[in-house]
Image (tube, rainbow, N blue to C red; front, top):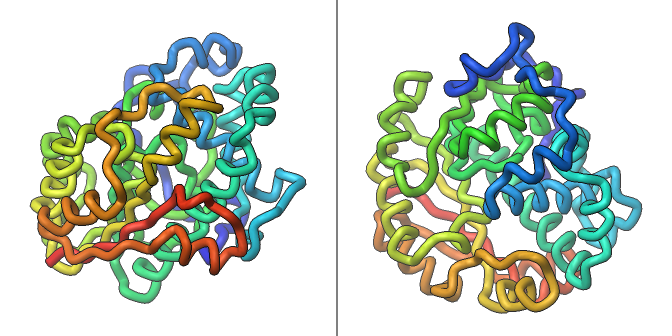
Length: 311
């Protein structure tokens, strides 16, 4: 399981490569009193889904009464609550918690978070890979939540809106690693990765890549390009962890949930694995059944995780 940083007060500082003009001297943007209803209305569908994922992580963390999943008690995320208080209207939060898929989505997020935390901590502490790129990072709080090695560098890539609200909620809290936030996405990833060098990224050294809840929102051809671009901008020995979902989860969410923007060209995890391997990675998939056996929970075959090494 991932190590938890003490109170989030590590020695690292956040470097926001986009918020210089909109931030107050204390690192928080000036609209800190904006109502969550107003902020929520400004999110696009993918950004709003990132907020909902943050809610699921809060529910499966220490703040949620029902710990149904075994072996995930180490997910402690008080930071995500600050994001929710800023971005998610209370009425909508209550509605989401009553969705028919609430229990399943909480289980999926709990297992996904636990395995990804474990993988990243092992690669950073044991293998000494000290830079991480979080593609479409959303409201991920691992820079604050986990205890990283002293020289760890984390680079988060997402929209200006996501970074601005995240900075407003968490900008005054020290991270446990150096963190830089850059505006971009999977469609201009190559250009963003070139800019990463300006804020401390070294493409000649091994890199950790986090691709969490991304593939489901992009076309298959874009997924292939994304994994190939990643491979072209890092050294051999780099590692990746990517979450993959079965088409069943998309169909369930469209039938019972609020999400409507998952792509129609939703590919089975095995096909996505082939795309990862064709892009220059040696990769394997942890099957949903393996995760169910380990954590003692029924994931309805909805969650798969890919581990890869740059050849």
